[in-house]
Structure formats: C-alpha cells, structure tokens
Image (cartoon, rainbow, N blue to C red; front, side):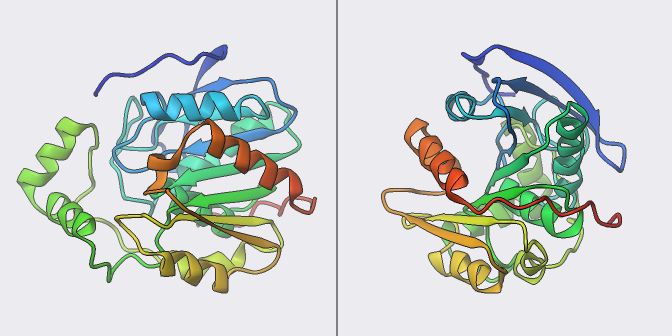
Length: 260
C-alpha cells in the first residue's frame, strides 16, 4: 500500500466485521457529540495523506470513524465498487451506535458515495447522508477516466496493476441496482448530494439524476473548481459540509431495515 500519514487528532484504532464477515480496520478520531462515518473512494484508504487532512478537519465538529473499505488498505475482502460496500458502512455505523452516539452521519466520496447511498436506502439507521461525486448509474459513462478504469477492472493484467496500486478487485463484479433506483428510499433522512463541476469521471447530470429521484429533505451542492471526490477534499470543504449538515432539519434516524 502507498504511504500513509498519521492523524493530527488523537486517533484510536478499531476493527469490525461486515455482515458478510469481511474484516474492516479503521480509526476513531475527534470528540464531537455526533459521529460521522467516512467512506473513501476507489483506490483510497482512510490514512491516505489527503484524506487524513480532510478527516482531521471534520473531527473539529464530529467524532470521525474513518476506515478502509473492503479490498483496500488493511481491510480484508475484495472491492465491488459499491455493490457490497454498504455492508462495510453499516458495520461502522453499528459500531458508532454501540459507542453511544445518538446521531450518526455518513459521508462518502465516489465509490464511498455509492456505499453511503446504498447503506441508507437498504439498511437505514442513520441521521443524515452526504454523497460526493457518486454516479447515478453504473453504466453509460463516456469519460476517458471511466474507460481506463473499465479496462483495468476487466482484464487480469489490469487487476494486477490495481493490486499494486492498493485495490483488490472482485471479478466478475456482482450486479446491483443503480444508485438512482434506490436513492428515493433514503427519505425522510436528510440527503446532501455534492458534485464537482470539473469532475473528470462523471458529469453533473449524474448528480441531478440522483437529486430528482431523492425524496425530501435534500440538498444539491454543485461546486466550482472541484474535481472528482477527494480532488476537492480539503479543510475548507470540510467546513462547508459541517455548515450544511448543521443547517439540515433535525429528524429521528430511520430505523434499521431488513438485511439486504
């Protein structure tokens, strides 16, 4: 795995298992009254230098639960690009609840954005959701970045290169509903959809599709000078997310749903 950076905040390691048995590792940092579960994107890990800076900034407001999604970093399993990663998010949400937090928010970027949408829609039990740079549909993207990623994930040589880069990829990838087909189930839990106007993977229409399909309450933030997911993750963006979450209507979290 490429180099990692320690957190500036005091961080305590944790380990949990997803509902299908995959082992997940992470750190808990900050001393906020509310918990925030952070899910990184494809080829990320929770101690990636840029993501450490972002989580440290979020920890000024929240107790942050950062962790490695399956197939990444020190966690077990294989990446499914969001199909089963909602089980990972759900396990860490359960840990935050067990630690005594009454309010738990999820935030994910790209693949992590898909994961938090699916967790809230299929499992529930959260109080707000922030999805950054997530596609509305799995297929149909014409960007060069998506074409390159498709080649890497569909060939043996490409998957070998991805392992060197830090991601163990499931093959073949399992099928799942498009995010746009499940996002409407999140309501009445507040949902914030964020998309960069300079995203080189997915165009802004993906965010609009998710927003139109989502129920109230919902917010759409289209960010200028913001690329794809972690390209825009910085202290200033963390502050904006915190302000947005504080402005959302308060509501009791949706109860956990039947296992999916």
